[in-house]
Length: 170
Ligand code: GDP
Ligand code: MG
Image 1 (cartoon, rainbow, N blue to C red):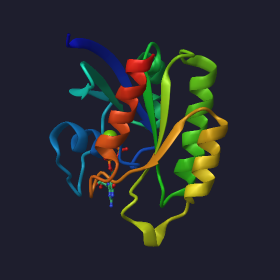
Image 2: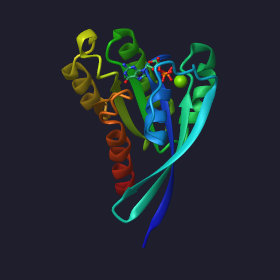
Image 3: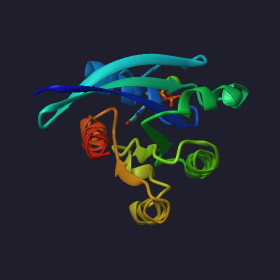
Image 4: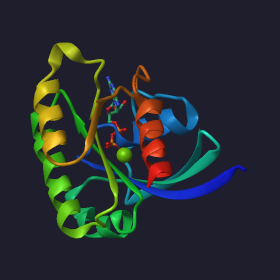
């Protein structure tokens, strides 16, 4: 039969890494060069079919600004999945991503599936974070890793699909 599972998913990461753009790409198949900054958090939903199951993602796209930090636990607590986003052209955003991973490891639910997204993969000429560095970090910390581009759509559906697959196994 076709089982429907609701799955709360949160996107975390620095301002400007492309969290909202990844959601817009995944939910609406669109990209805008001048994506408005998120205030607080925004909610979206999208479904993914895996075998005979439907995963209905309830997506919380957070702002990323420090002044909203105290709200973050509301979004990641009880989340089935978290996508931690950095901008591969910005080393500081990778450092920030690692801080989010630490916070989730310390304060989050132990069974939250964590994905690391190195976004803006289309901007290879200004890369500051290597695939090897991110992959090694992800492996050591129990995350799965993909480089994505909300602009070209590379790996965007794939990262959500991979999460959905892991949820059906959970
Ligand atoms: P957020 O603050 O993490 O939600 O980031 P936004 O989604 O608002 O994106 C910040 C800026 O980066 C916007 O100008 C986007 O158009 C741009 N952006 C987002 N994703 C990509 C991407 O994959 N490639 C490129 N080249 N630009 C992107
Ligand atoms: Mg945003």
